[in-house]
Image 1 (cartoon, one colour):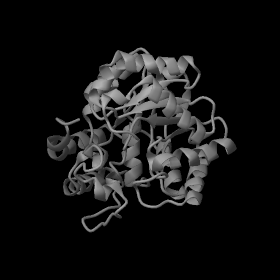
Image 2 (cartoon, one colour; image 1 turned 135 degrees about the horizontal axis):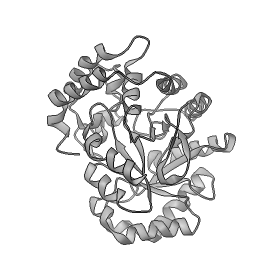
Image 3 (cartoon, one colour; image 1 turned 60 degrees about the vertical axis):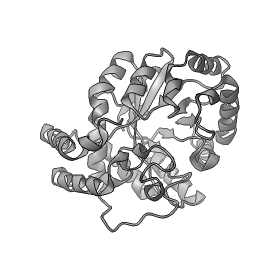
Image 4 (spheres, one colour; image 1 turned 45 degrees about the horizontal axis):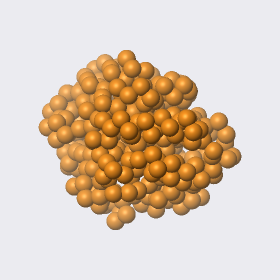
Length: 325
């Protein structure tokens, strides 16, 4: 797999990683055995970067990833913190950071966390000097090797990039979210910050596997968070209304080269963007994990495909999302 620099983290990572949200909660039931089999399949296929969070299954995802890294050393594991408490700026303190990272270190079974990201905190947190002083303290204490941020908006990303200690920015980037191409990616390349591209398949919409009659389970955020009832609506289908998303996917199908799946097309599109360090699609089983990794084996998409993605975005998607995130 192609290796890319993870910004200020000072590491090379495989360009296709694995997002471990599905292995914790909110995507339907995944047994621990299936989760471990998925993780092993991903690593066997070349994945070296895994992204998790303390809130995914209230630590379940971290614990499962912790079992993996005992068996498969040398991986880079990023986790996130902050979403297990009410979202007020006052919660983002050094004392809480120490407690949260201690819990994640215990869940993962490590002395030092590779990368800890603020997990889409209140916007004002990104402008708080004390927050970043506290993160610097965690590095100095040896609890974490580096820190980054996970953001909802491009404005938050640009604020974070200006911080000299921020190693990475995790942001939603897919064929339904083009705003980061214009505002964020050029800035991170200049600053030397890594970009972790999340939600690359728009919660599965860009896999092309869903239709108007698809039913999602009660414990699946694609059911219970359609209007942002539980967290930011932009995390579910990238904030695109489901029917409009299906229509947009139909316009993209003709662009998919022979031998490539719709999901691989969507992942390859992300990998083609300058400044992206790693893309982190989720997977619920080994077959999905291997298919995601295979996207790296295809050549970059032709320019006319990229132009068509932007045209479809401008026509159908831009009015719903561009002004919001």
